[in-house]
View 1: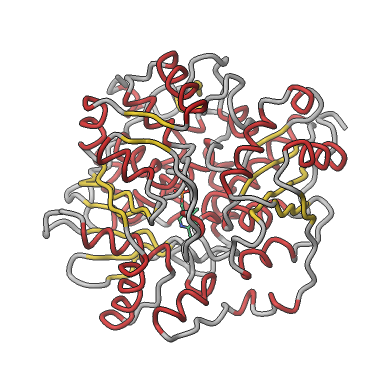
View 2: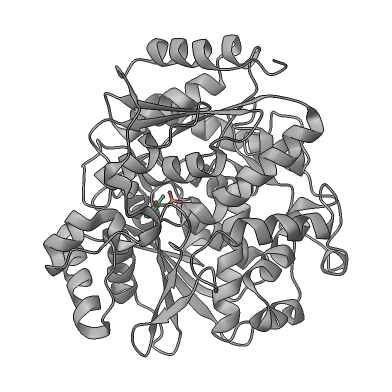
Length: 480
Ligand SMILES: *Cc1c(COP(=O)(O)O)cnc(C)c1O
């Protein structure tokens, strides 16, 4: 258990350990540049730092960047000075098209939207990746090292990572996406970035196939020995860290710490909602976290019945949630196991073989203290979109609609405000929005010419060796 003195001393050194207990601890700089831990696990902080009630109360009057520094400093430790961290946050969030960075919009007496899509690529992934790009640049300059980023995207991570890294020195990015399974806006936001350090790869397969190939590359010594390979998926700790901030930002504006707030989170890889869990561990009074899934409902089955068994992926209008294996769930399982790395390793190894895991009732009970889940079918999603428009004049995207529909179904005390995370701009999924509401959202001016730009993309079969050959041919060695 973290001691009280940590609240008074946020500069206490923070170490990062693997969920599978078999990798040496890292500091914040190392964990930012690392991907998966060498033992196949995910890095987590060695303990959850606590913020005092007074610190949370003060946030109500701070800017987004200021809140970001207060929330992230305990995780960064002394790897960056407060001034350096502040500069990076100002730079990252200065690129957002809204002065509040992540504005809250009221829908009715109980429901709010937290608009996370005002960054350069129109989805919440920008909030973390704009900062991560700057952290990479800073740390690579210090270490005089070349980094190769390899990632898989169900649409939004890819464009956000590419925008954050295009043209930056000492880094190449290889981004795999499932061919034909992302929206045309999502694809073009990646393939029209023609910087020479950006490599788009369309894989014949699903997002899970692409993600499995990336995971395999992290365990492939032939690749890892020559290249410094890093991740921009939410397995990267720094990404999750940056997402904790907006839970504090929103809740402090709705009366926290004196009033509890609930959040509904459209969920795929369990990264965004895990950040909400971390906010609660840090002392934010979170009434409930609603894990909203679409028909790809492994997390819903897991949290309701303990059945974490992977099915095949069904493509939907909310492609960023068309995921069956949610990597960050391992971080929660680690906590639910009492932070026992050996037990988590055994559990995950068994799951990797059988694609099936049963979660014990004691563990489920612990999870139920904060998480609830809801599965939203396509009709309810469509209804949420048309209702938001009719009742509150808000045009929302399919992912946000799943979050909002789940927020309305969840059993939450009517006096508690519920914030649904609006994870994408409606223009990013205009076909689906048009089908539901009859309105076709316009692209914001800053990307208005997206469909006139030239595209570049390599198509590869859903085959690990082909992807490995492509990456090793085009990447620069760590010391190159
Ligand atoms: C990535 C994404 C999600 C899912 O977030 P996770 O962190 O993977 O759970 C939801 N909505 C949108 C628009 C996204 O891009």
